[in-house]
Image (cartoon, rainbow, N blue to C red; front, top):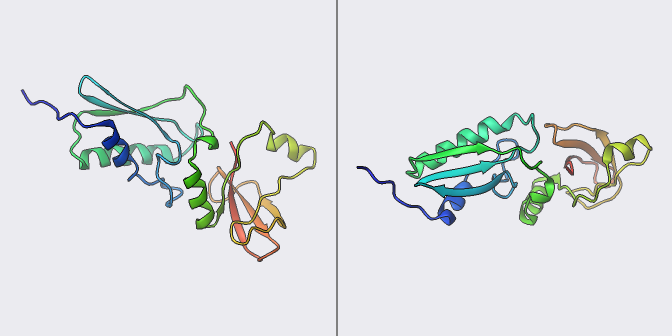
Length: 169
């Protein structure tokens, strides 16, 4: 009988940090908060992932990359489960991930505070998003949607740069 080698969970987490988010190539799926749990049950590795939002087109690619990475590392008995029990939030992103976004030129999300951006926009108030390039507060929303649905497009009047803002969810 072929026994599966027991792999420590810390090693699995480390390997999952090598899986890059296909829409934001400077971040991995662990620091994004997409990978929620790793369990080992009856010699099977179970990786639980939560989509950033229910229609996120990157989730198929992320799941395939997790499969590819685990197989590459010699893990034979595993499954990847998409978990919808909790809604993903930008609060699950690590502080390091938010810093990496800023260095990449994307304004990171702030902590969620219960304020609804949509309701505020209906009232005519607009969130001030600091420019990731020069930290100016002289920025303006250009479009609610950037290159992906989870980002909006801004323009900085301080350094005359367009930039994206990762929406606070």
